[in-house]
Image (tube, one colour):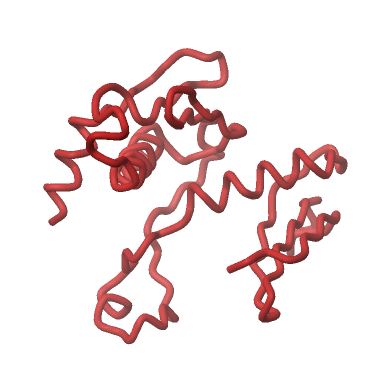
Length: 170
């Protein structure tokens, strides 16, 4: 989708909790909406856009079906499956992605558990690995690092682990 317009505004969740809503609109009229917790009721527009983009990157499913119905459908993923349930707020994790010779840090994300954060890191590392070009890009070292709020590195997914995970699902 080629984004031609973005909107950022305050809204309320069904339970009345203040949220920040970011809407990305494309050329054909399609829109993607990201609702984020906004407990203090204010946020800078650019920070909200960056956070919404990070959420979209983390939740994209890149051709993966969430359930058997979707796996056997025509690509019109219209059945919802519960993939995890958490009654706790979860913990905050910070993801760093290797980007050539540098790294890119995305805004902190709240995930239900370290296992969920690690699974997300592995999925993202496989995506990064798929984009690397042999002979042009360095095919060694780390691809994704996960840290806690204090900056302590909790796990690092390297090229070898991403390659092993990719082979395991093929």
